[in-house]
Length: 154
Image (tube, rainbow, N blue to C red; front, side):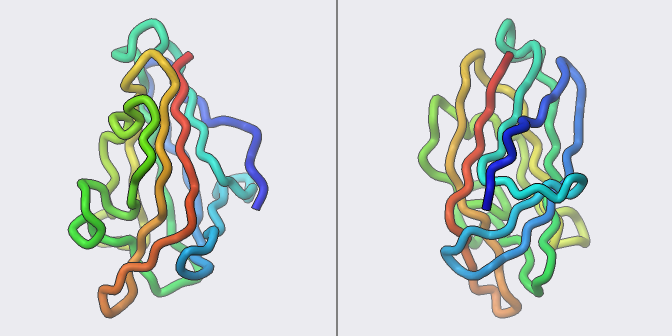
């Protein structure tokens, strides 16, 4: 999988939605995460929040809508994986990066869609590592290998 060099930019005090597809390839494997518009594969999700370096309250909101494709799996409930977020198991927080997650929930009535809301929470760059978390028809959790999230105020 190649990493997209382009970051996703959120203008100051604006809300922007970005759409992605996620195709599971097996437990502990790098799942195919792609920009839904360009089709380019992504390993690290880079989000730039304009105006947030001066003051994090100037941050807009990035909504990432992730659709599971080519599978019967659905995004895992946060109760199955621990924490407060559906669809992802987080770890290796860098500089308070988990504070950037405002919501990570399965969309009502559409368990193959995950909506992640992010806002800059600091004046300095931060991030975290995570594994995508899905569950099969029996409720067993399947985790991916490790993508990362990088949040950068400018």
